[in-house]
Amino acid sequence: MPDGTIAYEVHEPAAARARMAAADWPLIICSPAMGDVRDAYVLLAQSLAEEGFRVVVADLRGHGDSSATFSHYGDEATASDLIALVEALDASSAILVGASMSAAAAVIAAGRRPDLVRGLVLVCPFLRGPASRLKTFMQRTMLGLALLRPWGPAVWRSHSARLWPGLPDARQRAAHLVSLLRRPRRWQAFWATTRTDHRVVAPWLEKVGCPSLVVMGQADPDWKDPAAEAAWVARAVGEGLGEIVMVSGAGHAPMLERPDVVRPRVVDFARRIVAGNAAPRSAGESEGEQDATSGAKC
Image (cartoon, helix red, strand yellow):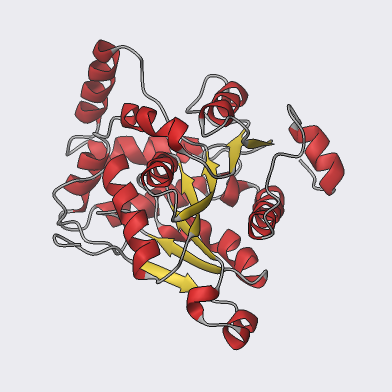
């Protein structure tokens, strides 16, 4: 990118390296939530790599080890970065895994470049904002004021710790992430990222033509009714045939809070995409029915 760089790391399965060229490995790109960093996917990446996938975990602009010198941040900028990563990695296509804000970016990327995106995993996705422009303005104004220095880092640390009710070390993780954002220029970049308006996703929802899997924590505090939001996402993206996994005991980062549930479901979904058999199993299938079939505890 002309005004900065995106930091990423690649998890390459040794067996796949031995039998095929890198460009032929099934590629999965994971992008974390706003305020988080790429290690949120470490457990999921390990499971996918063990199954023969080349997995890339990337930091957002201004987060982790990525540059904080960009002129634009948010959903659309992150979508451009995801597309650029697929192209830079010399892959014909990829499955995109996005959490929260990054899920919005993944949908935009799939709508812009359907030739490059073969599947979506949307973790606790923010794909819409308030219908009212006034309400949007008020929410963004209040959030912007709450995150101004000097009180902003403390406000975000307290908020983050409540996002992950299923994570035993939620307070420690929140404190660590905020410490990363205290480095030079990082808080300004993070603040700019919070200004994103998820209504920009709307024009792309119907343009998505690939399978999708919605992973939502049943205790996600960002939603009054997480199950209802997951159902809306599954209907709204593409042809409305998305699969849903509701994860009990988890909030806004179910891949960290309940890896025992999330990892096998994402691995199964990715396998079926590669095999060309990722259509939903049955309309309206509930988490309880899915877990009874897979044997997962939830």
